Length: 167
Image 1 (cartoon, rainbow, N blue to C red):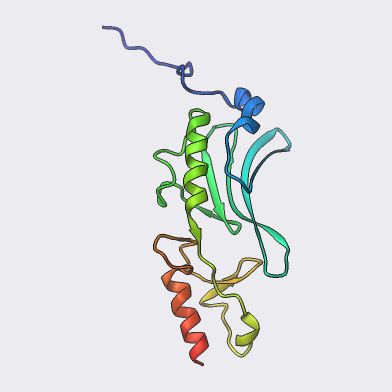
Image 2 (image 1 turned 90 degrees about the vertical axis):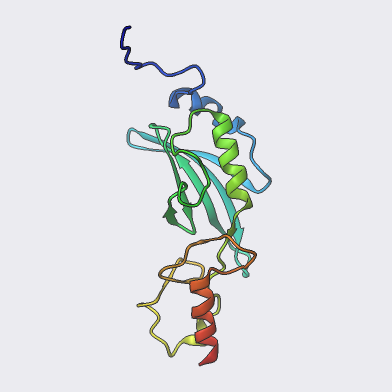
């Protein structure tokens, strides 16, 4: 029996160069966008979902991006998350357009922690040790970002909000 090393891409696996030509053909849910960005010699395909602040300003709430190695990266509120840890994918390497569509559909269904909105109410507190500002709202430093239950906040942000509202 011969041992073969497969350097070639399998039939089902798409090359990044081919993916660039069809990345906008991925079926994405309403509210999602696709863009291709390049810096130097690197090119990245980004799928993103925009949220709207209470003041009407758009911001990137969810994003998945793929570089030339076809490995998926994810971010929520500009903070990178592990897509495996949040069960968004079975593996990080995207092999075809269907893998990407399944990921986006799964990510689209996830609820993002709403954090703590009205920091003005808590001006007397130094929150920098227990919270950070993501540009839109404050979050507990251990915020999970994705909420897996029927809540609008993760348990850490909910506890912090409760403590702040009591004082």
